[in-house]
Image (cartoon, rainbow, N blue to C red; front, side):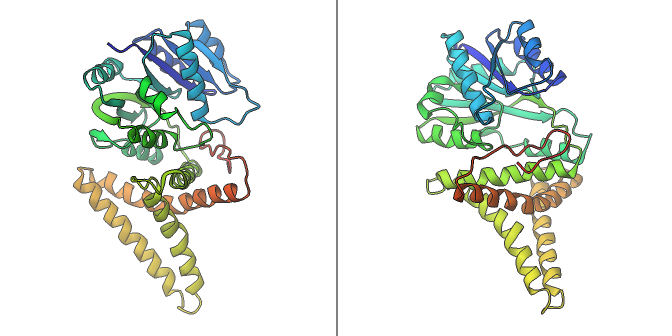
Length: 335
């Protein structure tokens, strides 16, 4: 049987961290919490329930990838017998029985490196943005190309791939899975409930920043692995630029001499693409309401994703340090 440990990361998660760590303790005592400069009682609470704590050096730019790497290193140092680690974000909590189910899958599938399940949004009805998160995470069951922020890793495979790329500010899980699969391992998504997430997204500005972060991740993923067999991130980057930048700019440039017809044409193209997305969602069994929501907001996200792509390339060309693009907090920042 695999020996499983848990690594949770967070900053100022409050009650969400309490739920996270208490749900982890129901399955294992081998838990590390990695804190990235919290000003609440996250550290003291974690220590009070017997959780090992790593406080990141805040003089070094923070990334979730770096936090997870440091947490896994401490986990193995503290409990050398651990051979599988479940990473989880501090705003999530485990579903009952999930860790046991994931551990059993690893034990019965020796070629599997990563196992994840169904992440759900805790309050999908609180806002359309929360609902979008819940829909986004409802992905097909079976062998997969990548996982999200919550997943169980076989440490042998994790180490063979070199762990997370600490410099990535987003998209670190799919990028790691590209390298894991290149080593001959597989990634799997089970039909079991895995975690409850608390997105706390109530404003369009938060949705915009989250989409911008996705665009940055697409561009960096394509830069790293776009020439590989997966063409990782290439399709998403191309779609972001075409729909979020090329079409709008072309419509504006032609607006004067077309008497505004170019603007109507592009709006029509957006509506048609949104309708196609809605139709595909319906074929996957989505309700009419959810299908329309996906069609509308997928297209609304394109300009933000294009901004993220451009931000990545600006930073790369100017050799600037990438900083987080955050969507939580009082107001979204430019990142």
